[in-house]
Length: 438
Image (cartoon, rainbow, N blue to C red; front, side, top):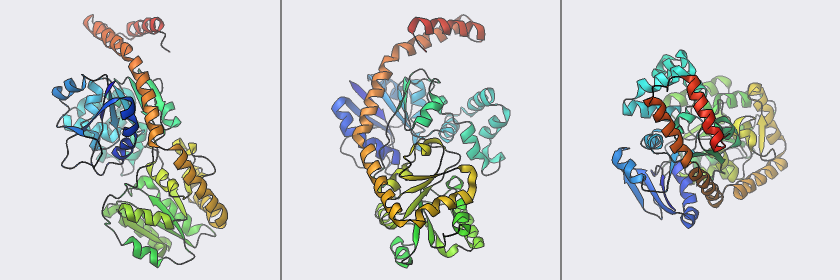
């Protein structure tokens, strides 16, 4: 079977990293070509790639010659030349994020279709959210995160899909039944330490590690520094939690100056500035060095916008137990590798969770060993490839249903009945009965 996988292949894409882990096994099952938006640089790989400049008719026609196209989508501009293809030529869509709001809006701006997108949000979600999608700057700085959770647009991205691949049962439950095809849950591989790429932009991690007191308990949170990391909650937790005076918190990852200044000012006001570091972007080697020294990790996200946490998996693979909020896909982590905290419990709840790890070094070490074993046993490229192959099989079985849906929609439009809900519903009911659709 000839399959085209359309994915970013830029060096900084962690999504490209995990997709590439599956490609050797996929090549054993498929006659696979990897397509990617053209960029100045590509990550090194053992297979050739086919760059394309634009999501235009020429590209669509070329992809239409394959038996199946697999579209890889994440909530970033790196996927802006993939989304229009997925909405034009039906295929299997791999969703790496539970919210696609940033990607969909960015693509709409680039393609001049923002008014149509705003109209879609207005009809499905109401005028307030539509106005915020049109003008994000009109809301409070943290309001956009809430908009992304309330208007995830993941089903907009899969509107014409033959099937979808997601990375948690939580995400599958959110979209199952809302697209034509089946939803497959696949075990996302752990990124190969691709947080920082090649350079350290902040203080020298080696020097910082050398300055840590011998009895320090190093708590790390990995990923881009933003409001959704809840670093403020972690700071309040280590500032007020009894028994946490030895905890040093490092926010490891790229950060904007304003965001870094905000959390540094908070640390100063709480009296924990000497125990807090914003490292900035770090190299792969520095990340590995930091995680080797780390005693505990934190992956606090609320609202949850991603479909799975690559940073949490990276931390677990390093043998570091994590503190997470007990919701969304984080709730699916085994209880013996993660300390789960009610998001409503605030800093006090997080402090109590951290204290479990700080107070019992032996159990913390055992939990770290289980964390590493969990990541190694359940998150391989081969296992991911097997799930993609099964999802592709299901997607191909849905192609006839896609043609049926397109033909019915075209006929209703020709007859002027497409805007008659009662008639559309009755036609759909008969089609579902005939084809045994749920």
